[in-house]
Image (cartoon, rainbow, N blue to C red; front, side, top):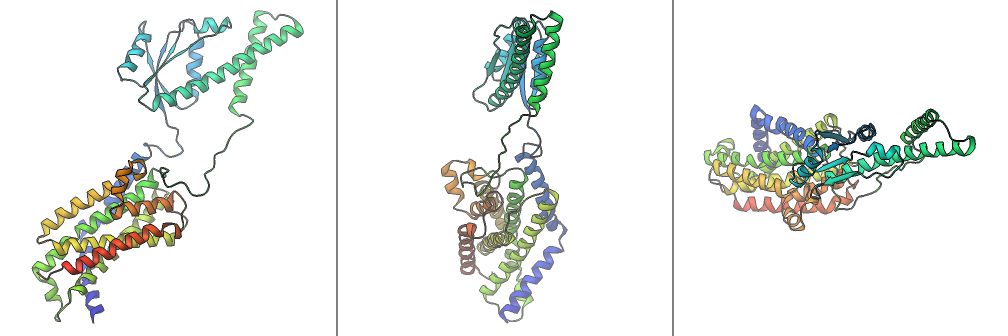
Length: 409
């Protein structure tokens, strides 16, 4: 009989919830919207294989054509967008923009750049940078790669002219130009397809401290955990309403023990949370190409432990609250706080050690750790068992407290 009573209570609540269109919207539609927005934000607004472009301020003071060649080479790297400064004061303007913090990096090409290259004299470019930003490092590396390529072409042009002079005598100006242009074109083409490259392949488990994969690989599990928590805790108000309106007394003719009511409420919240989780997992895999790891069993166990912990906390809040409004307010505050502290809005791995310690005092921190271990670090079920056991501990603790705190009225 106790099982039948619990089933009746659970089934009634599941039917009521699934018939509510606004509830379904928050259970299924809103997590997808937030997953998409967060996924774009975490990925920098571009797919993983799209090049990230940085801005470089340029003051091209060169009186010849070789400065334009340099800028074209920088643009061909497909990493840099050039912000050109015009006028006689472009050099000074570039320096002031960096000093004032309005721009992060600037390249100044001197007036005699073409003249010195033609005379085979050393020429020096000026690179202004703001050391407080990451951008200058990236842009400087791109500029240096472009310069290294042009240096190789320049040296090859001089070498072919010197070789011609040694073997056949000093070439005419026209012949020298043709030889230099031909060898530069050859070197430029060859540098585009180098003989040796390095392929970086990530194997095995990453260290725990390593920042996990971002983009949708973070936003999909994070938003799934967030809305399971948010919706799960907001359901606590339903238990308050049932107690105050004596819905359970009218539903069942025989007396019902409080443990049976708590178990029934745990059960239907667990069912709803699990269905929501697997819907979001499937949608993430199909719509956002999310890789949920190598072990679906491990993912299922982690999800079940987390949903059980959320269900226990939801029933505990409903048991302690005297009004639906108080339950909803407490649920909202707790869920948002646990999302922020538990690494759902940003990875705990990028936060200070003290922040990480606080994040592991609540279920979200452990659940997000398990998700990152499965999805970014290749862990199996055995590897995430510490997180699973902690989540089960939260579930048992919350549920036991809910049984002790529950009152019929």
